[in-house]
Length: 386
Image (cartoon, rainbow, N blue to C red; front, side, top):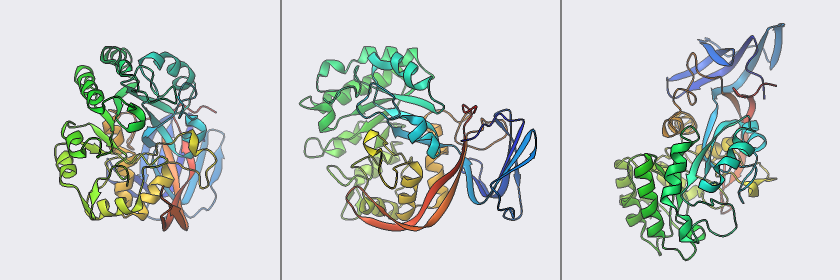
């Protein structure tokens, strides 16, 4: 990771891409005082193979001939929590170092834990960490489901907390899975979540229930424009594809403005489901990792570039991949002026990815696909001053 508050920094890459502005080609991004100062197109790939070249005491030129320079990646659904969550993991070491400069915690923290989350994670991290506030007061603080006690689904506490921390809290998290709810009726949990959403003006980040408990069509019918359904390429216990086709009521939900997020995690990504959906033109709006402490020590290490690589192997184009980890999540989180794009004056949250030779990649069921893998070779974050 590199300090973007140098007097001058130029990063030249074989490809500079911004889905928001349509930039796509060889170029150089100039950074001054922690912000993008200019974006220059070049007619050919950089010739200098050196990655770092000090040209003066106040200016550094970086050259990545095979690199793809992007806005810093945005992970809409992960678990960036240093304490207080059973799923939490350090956002700087497991996410920022691997290209994700902005990450949203999905349901780790409820109304009772926000102040500690601010002190222990948000203020103590170089990453930009945001929160999809759990409807449950206790969030994911125990091994029991967060809605196992229905009293924890506290509408008033949720709405009041969201109003108190508008810069931190951008969504509300409502997961009606069997684990999250236990014996609690998932319909009542969603009913309360929808009320809290209406009162706070925040969209839901929604985790689905298995259809034998509650038909998926009924669940999706209650969601509104800008609500986000996560785990969208899961094979079981719920699946948006049947006989190779996306279910009609899933298409109807998208037509109404409901968004769909990957949320790979430990059990929520199937190559077969992704390939069927993408082949039918149903692309995920956002690509996220659901990265949690259980991923620590995996090989290859679970991160957002790896999930992007799997979606590439499943058929997504580079431009669609990049949009789903930059522009679209920035819009969902209302960060368009701060993240997700390359334009003069925006904070210099930047990442350079490179493609490695074809390698085998596995989904959560052990199904293998072969494709080129994105790896991170440079990250610059506006909050990194070392």
